[in-house]
Image 1 (tube, rainbow, N blue to C red):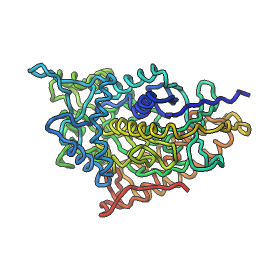
Image 2: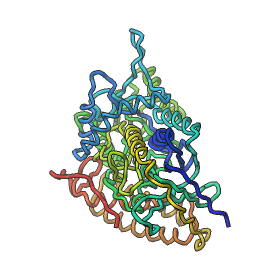
Image 3: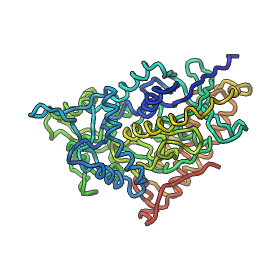
Image 4: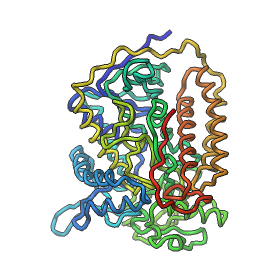
Length: 533
């Protein structure tokens, strides 16, 4: 039998995207940090983010305008205080990134000055998106992860799955505080324990719960499921954003086409070449994502079409290649020259607007547990995320959480010895096919019944199927040793249930939640909050 392994640190950060890395780097100036990553350090949603980060840098723009645009996109249920806090702290968060070495695009002016090139995306009234060509996430991720790897106070553990949080309540100890987590070392295939004064969830969203998604494979809702099992409230899980434009091609799994294409003048066209967005919204292609995704979904279903087309070929080729080099190169590999040809696109699950409830410091309902980035529900996004507010939320709330944790570091003792993981009653599985089948079934019924357009009947069917899968998976989990696929499936089924329950509770259509049995908005509406038993 392998010897039990225990790690210890003041802070355990679970997740290695923009939120986790920013938090780790801020805290590492004062204390020791363990940062765990489910795959390689770079394999999260941040790396694949194309568009950019919203912040007021233009003299004609204002924080108030950024706030107003966010509130409009959020369809009336954003927390205005949170939106104001985020927009007001955006510029200083961006300046920290620039100091870290992220190289955002600049313009060459006639007077020799080099202001940042600001692009515009759907829902924004001004150009306020800082970007590094069309690979902003990659620039942010690689810059921050290099700094983290080289920081003496940060211990990076790659290829580790977080299994569950360890709390004083679960162990029968006084109070209700997080004490650490059980983690699965994928290389050694063994469960290890991490003891920590504070734990931060920076695990991203849960769009892998859907059949078609722009997200990488790791986006399986782990942090949301773990926090729920530990007793934390979640909110607004019904609001899953479907990105309107994912490349439709057999060899282009998950490849996203940034909203900045539409910001720079790309049109959406039917297969016959005609535009359709002006018929759905006066802002046409620059309408918020929920409107654009529903319009595409409507046209595809009406026409029986496999896809629609995104066309920027009317712009000068040099302009297109300069601003969208990643997209140009990738499409060219697939035989599509975006300077000449329209691009086939479909909507795909993209961003989780709900999550674990937190305050302005990222603190959850469980003492010592923080949630930052896409895993969290802060109140910023409301019923629909405004483009390029996501990486911004990671940066602003990671810094807020770091300040809150720093203020308590000297007051919180290291937890006492934690019990090792018990594997005495489980065996190796010879039924991996069960996991594969359940995985496929879950993602398919979520796409069909809890997708872009919903009905009461579809949601009821989805909940029944979800309950059956949960029972099967719990039996499986109780009897066999853990694996990556089992852990992710267990979390995805839990998160699917939360999405369905939130969707059933909202008896209206608002933002990203469209239920044709309840087409109107309610006069008095707010977040959908679920409380664990």
